[in-house]
Every structure is written in structure tokens, then in C-alpha cells.
Length: 209
Image (cartoon, rainbow, N blue to C red; front, side):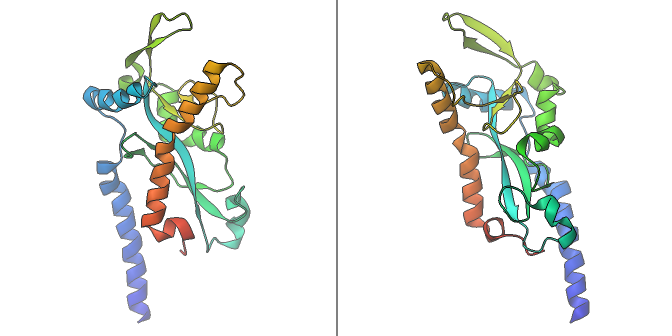
């Protein structure tokens, strides 16, 4: 009986490693071609956010059996040990990046500094993203062409150009309406988290490994 349990545990970890290395990249990826990029960005452009390719946020999963020596590193604002993932998805609720995990005590800004997807668009390492052009209007109503994609986030991230958020402190009517619209469009990533937590109990009630 003990031998079978030990073999099952080894097989489980090998299976999870195989999923992460070979299966996940087939389903979780950012736009890889110009056509895919235009299709993803086009949805956000119709919503009033040209150049945007997704929404990004961090999700925390309780770690019920976190080793005692790691609890102080994994306990953040939630008050209990967690592991977290900085995820990005598009308007179709399809994940385009799920790197990680990170320890729960890290904030969004720290996680973004080591997140491969966030760093790719921040450092402009992908020519497909860097050279993508889109059009916006300035305060005078003139059409302006810009380059480089970006994603929607909440207020906990860096003020990088590629990480845009609403401004709750805006005093003018335009700024307030933009902030409200950004918060509304960004709910796609929150919906993804809610759907997965309803579907998979481990994400809502915690990991017992």
C-alpha cells in the first residue's frame, strides 16, 4: 500500500511537469502572428481601447499545508499563506499568459518585475508587439498614430506605458468616464478567475499539497 502511494505521488508530479512543459504552451500563449494580434486588439479597439491586447491581474490560491519555514514569505495581505499567479487574458476569456507561481507576500509591482510576459512588452523585446501600430485621438480631436501594445491592469502595478489603468483621482469628466470604462473592460480577467474557482475546488479552498 505504501509503495503504491509513493509511486502515485511520483507519477502525479511527473504528469504535472509534463502538462506545464508540453500541453500548456499549446493553449496558453500571447498572439503569435499579425493576424492573431489584429483579431485580439480589434476587440479592445471596439471597446474604446486601441492597442490593448488583454487584461492582467494577480490571483492568490491558499496554500493550506505551507511548510512552517515558508509561511512568513507566503503570507501577504490575505493573512494566510498563498501562492499567486500573474495572469493575463483577452476579451474572449482566453488566457494568454500564466507564469509563476510566486510567493504570496509579493505585491503586484514586484511580481511584474519578474513576470516574463510583462517584461516582454515592457522591454519591447517582441518585434511583433513593438511594431504594431494603432490610432488614437488627442485632446484636440486629431488622429495620432502610436506603436506598441499594452494591457489593462488595476492600480497596484507600475506606471509603465504598457500597463494602463484607470485614474480614480481624476477630477475632470473625461478622466472619470475613462476610469470607469477601464474598470468595466478589465473585468474579463476577474471573470476568468471566478469561472475557474467555481470549476476547480482547489483554487477556491486551497492546495493541500
